Image 1 (cartoon, one colour):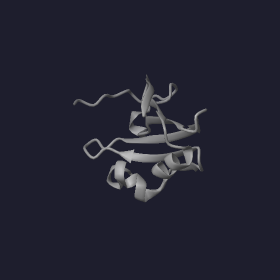
Image 2 (cartoon, rainbow, N blue to C red; image 1 turned 90 degrees about the vertical axis):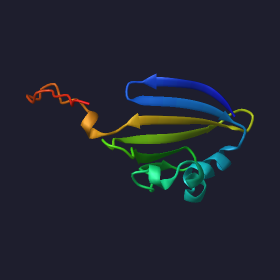
Image 3 (cartoon, rainbow, N blue to C red; image 1 turned 180 degrees about the horizontal axis):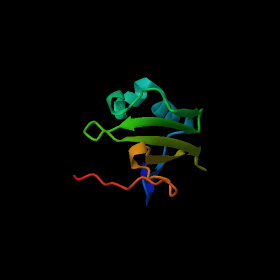
Image 4 (cartoon, rainbow, N blue to C red; image 1 turned 60 degrees about the horizontal axis):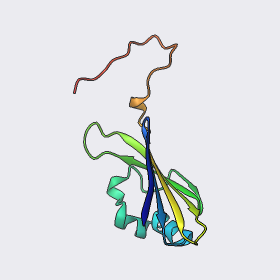
Length: 116
């Protein structure tokens, strides 16, 4: 397995890997609960059921921190075949917690920050 790139965008981390395994095998590893449990345990998920699913292409899970403030995020596993029969796996991990979304610009509420 070779890592192709890691890219950070605001509130999102994108990692891409080149895998020797065919897409069908990688799909099984990210979508079948018995296989997924070995590398992404259900206790790390807010819900063991996927948030969304495009069979063979993308699956998304909701995750929740195990410590306060228990922020939630969405992690997406995107698969596409490469030219050698392997798989390019893109993992997009983005914060999804509503507490982190700034108020609308026409909102008259004061902006408050929490003390750490």
